[in-house]
Length: 297
Image 1: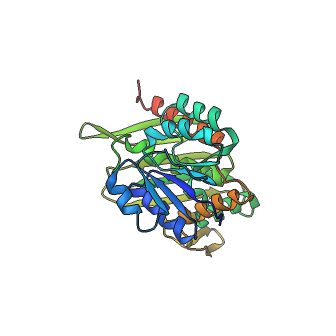
Image 2 (image 1 turned 135 degrees about the vertical axis):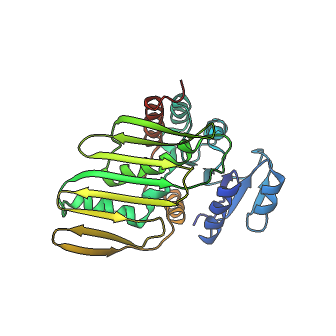
Image 3 (image 1 turned 90 degrees about the vertical axis):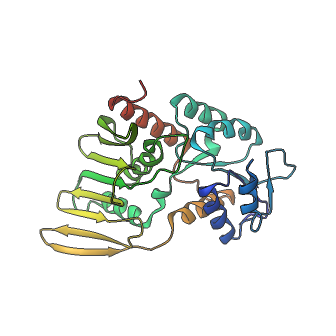
């Protein structure tokens, strides 16, 4: 890992997980967060914790883990530093903000799509590319639960980027928006059911207003169906007319794997999987699906 520290902007609930994994990778970290509570939580493991960006120390890279609606503000301030930036998904919550972020930071800006680093999703992508089970006909993803910890956005902005990144990893691209219906309850928007593409078709359902917790990915091929049945699953199950089989996959945590990839990039390795251009396309696709569902005007 680099001798120079990484700057972590935002050390709330998820930022603390990022700090934990960076330090477990032996990476020095400087934290910036206006919250005294957040800085106190970071103090035992961070190299330093500051209330703002007025710091006088060289950093090798930057990770942005502020609330989604504040990503563009952070990028506007940090782009001039000339360092690579890894920003939590989604890149922004408005198309114009996502495009501005790309214009400001360009090829130095990447999006933290952790599900692209899940060993099970990578295995499904490898099956899709190999042609071993025939062509991919349909991708089905579910992301259901009963919690929403963010005040700045509704659950669609929090949940849907994960499933779109799964489509990108398995199919190699993001299918076009076709149709969508919003899920509403108790006077709020809680989720969306959507269809993207045609051949292959991506059917996705996300909701933060369900009794069950489900993170399931199914890929229907010509000759079989392959399933990853949860974020902690260490096996891909394949069912076909020739019988069932199981592919074991590593149990490595996706967040730690994507952070390791970013640190290796800072050390002249390959860039992270999701570029800023990918991030703009994701924001655009979510905005299109929201409009199809009658949201956002």
